[in-house]
Amino acid sequence: MARKLKGKSIQSKGLKGALVRHQINEKKQKQIAQNAEIENQNKMNKLKSMKSSKKEKQNNKKMAPLVKSKGLMPFGFEDKVLLIGEGDFSFAKSLILQNFLIPENLIATSYDSYDELIAKYPNVDEVLSELKELGVKVIHQVDATNLPQTLDLILNAKQRKSNKKVKLFKDNGNLNYIMFNFPHTGKGIKDQDRNIRDHQRLLVKYFENCKEVFKLVNTEDLQGYNTTKGKIILSLFEGEPYQSWGIKIIGRNNGYRVERSGKFDWSMFPEYHHRRTNSTKDTTKPAAERDARIYIFDEWVKQESANKNHEDSDSD
Image (cartoon, rainbow, N blue to C red; front, side, top):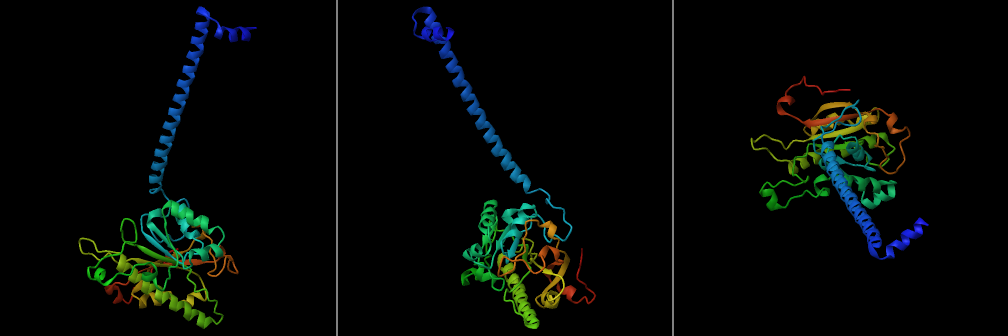
C-alpha cells in the first residue's frame, strides 16, 4: 500500500505532490554529486599511482642488486656495457631484472638476425620486447670479428678528419665495458687442435675490434686524460679445451692484461640460460653445473710492461 501511495503521489497535485517531487529531485542531485566525487577521487588515485610509479622507476636506478653477489660482478651499476653474442638475450634480461645495470646503459647484440633468433629460440620475441620496453638497446647481426662495421660505427673521411666520435648511447656517454659470454664459433670442429686455433683466431679478432670500438666511441675529458680506454670482458668454462685457448697471452699480444678475474656464479643471474651457438639444446652437462670464470682485461700500461714481476689479479 505504501509503494502504491508513493507512486501516485508523484503525479498528484498540490503541496503533497510538490514535496515528493522535490525530495526525489534532491536525491538525484545528491547521487550525481556523489558520482562526481567518486570519479574525481578515481582520477586523483590514478594520478597519484602514476607519480608513485615514476618515482619508483627513478628509485630503481639506485636499488641494490636483488641477488647477493657470490661471484665476480665485472661492472658497476652506472657503467655502460655492450654485450656481444647474446643467444636468447636471457643474460641481458637477468642483468636488468637483478638491478645490476641501468637499462639505458646496456646495449645487447646478437650474431643472428631477428628472423634467425625467432626460429632458433622459443619465447625470444617476448624477451626482446621486454628489454626494449625497459629501455635496453637491442641490435642484431653484430659480428665480434667486425664490430665497427656491424655496429654501424664507420666514419667517412670528413668525420675522421674532424675527430668526430660515434654516438652509441642516448646521452653520448663513454662505453666502459664490452662483454662476450662463452665465445664459440659454432662450427663443431672435431679435431681439437684445429678447434683451438679456430677459437684463438676468434678471440684475437675480438680484442682487435673492441679496441677499435673504444677509439671510435669514447672521448677524452677536458683535462686531456685519455678516457678512450674501455675494458674487455670474457667469460669461459674452466678446463679444456678453453684453457688451451690461452686468452691471457692473446690479451697481452693485443695490448691488454687481466686486471681481475673471478668465479662466474650462475645463481647471480637466475634468468640466464646458456645456449649452444647453433641450437636451443644445453651442453652435455648443464651449464649451471659447470665451473666458469669471468676475466676483465684492461689496456696494458707501458710502465707495467717493464715490470717483470707483474701478475694478473685473481679473486674468487
